[in-house]
Amino acid sequence: MDITLLQETAQRMVAVGKGVLAADESHPTIGKRFAALGIEASEENRRLYRQMFFCSPGLEDYISGVILFDETIRQRSDDGTPFPELLDAKGVVPGIKVDSGAKPLAGHPGETITEGLDGLRDRLGEYFELGARFAKWRAVISIGNGTPSRGCIEANAHALARYAALCQEASIVPIVEPEVLMTGHHDIDRCESVTTDVLQCTFSQLQCQGVSLDAMVLKPSMVISGSDSTAATVEEVALRTIGCLRNTVPAAVPGIAFLSGGQTDEDATAHLNAMNRRGPHPWNLTFSYGRALQTRAMKTWGGDPAALESASQAFLKRASCNSAATRGAWEPSMEQSIA
Ligand code: 13P
Image (cartoon, rainbow, N blue to C red; front, side, top):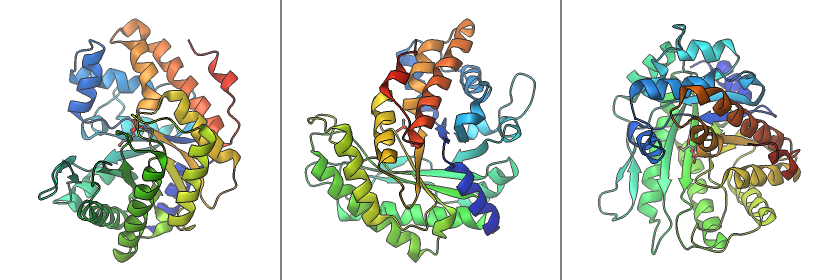
């Protein structure tokens, strides 16, 4: 383990003004998003689409790191440069999704456990050779009638901690992602109490497994009302989320990079901005968005090679708004120039 490399990489990933692009959708997930727009889910289309992000001019002004999928970390740009090398040359840290997805948790109907620990040490060694300097593992917790159960929270927190320890052993920074899903009728109070339980359990397991907290990045969901409930205001989401994080996340953690989780692009930006306006905080607060950075760009592209440049502009616009939000400097008027 190279602890200095780990600490420096973690700091770079959450540097003020920058955030992480999550471009690590599995084949079924990206396939669904392409299908909704009538785009063929071929390997070449996935390569072209992701190349559009990685080759966006000035990407490095707003993006500190990119989470790749197993297929993508092995792909090359049109001129034959491997994607990890292309990103590294721009000063953008290449990362890799290493979990193998959320599977039904035995004995807990409707709940899931994220798998992928078997053989992970060997896979991390290979990914380091391919250029990855950070990794991601997503645990999924859903709120429902009587859920999440203690069994689900503990099993997922334990897996996250085992994954994080293996990453650090391989000199790879772990992004620890316990996602509390937005889906449901629950109100913001319930989201706050579940998120608090999940984060407390996650940090207890991280400490138990000997994970260095100064060499990781936390990727949580925000404290927000369920998608089928009345939306809380931007200020309420910011206040509740910061309060919950202050109660659960040790100050040794260098940064917290939120997922967007199905929020609209503008909500994800506005919430991050409102939190940073209330700073300083013990940790840097930034973004590690998938959909909230990609949706507009994917629609703009629509599979048409002639639209790649406009798609790239749409992406850069979102990235720049989120970059401003890491400083608390975003204004709704910045959205107006978006096509
Ligand atoms: P969203 O921002 O679309 O939630 O994706 C982030 C991510 O990496 C999910 O694991």
